[in-house]
Length: 329
Image (cartoon, rainbow, N blue to C red; front, side, top):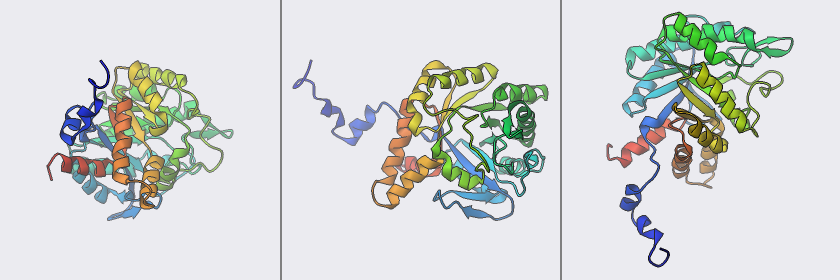
């Protein structure tokens, strides 16, 4: 059958019918909120390049997490900003580090919230790279030892899941073995499996003070033109014991998200990164776009591509909007 018998607009006429036949739904349960924790007390320091995002001390962060959980957001991802850095990322490993203390405080106030911690050295190294430097390059295997220690420290503090984002070869397997050998087999791994060397990370590096002091990260993060390589990376992480695999960034890699979703049975996460967030807000501030509608369209597109979970700085705004739409508020 064809026009005029078939009229596709019949199922678009009203919001009720559009809602009824909607193929892809964005839910608050799909969201993970990335947060930045810093030293001190009663600190909420706005990030200039990411309006609405702030570096927070652990007390402020714990209250923020409580509010996010009340909005229905099930999980947060923590990034640490230490008060001191050195070449070996020593501050990442202390039991009383900024992440470790934040995890304890969050779990004290909101034990049901799933707390995920970023496991990478870049925020803790004076040179800003994601690993230990030897002869001017990041030494993969020496870095693995540090990542194991870091993951163990986070898990012992109470993290439910660790998220290695460094892109060292073999790090998922190394962390899984370290956790299991220390009786922490219940701690999950959210693997940054296909993390690209992207220009979309600029605002994050401003927030985390983690820009490399020399060179760049293209020797260990993925080359943006590559798609098949992402499937190899994901397969390796699955074989090494990842519980969830992730594609990062999201917006420019929707094809990769789709391919990964077709290739694996594990949950697939996508990280809608700082540059995506900042672009939407900047254009909305200029009056060039409807920021809220673009926000929802962007995240729905990520879900439509195949992501089960979305890490987004819009998490609070989206949760509030979904509650209003559902008539909760």
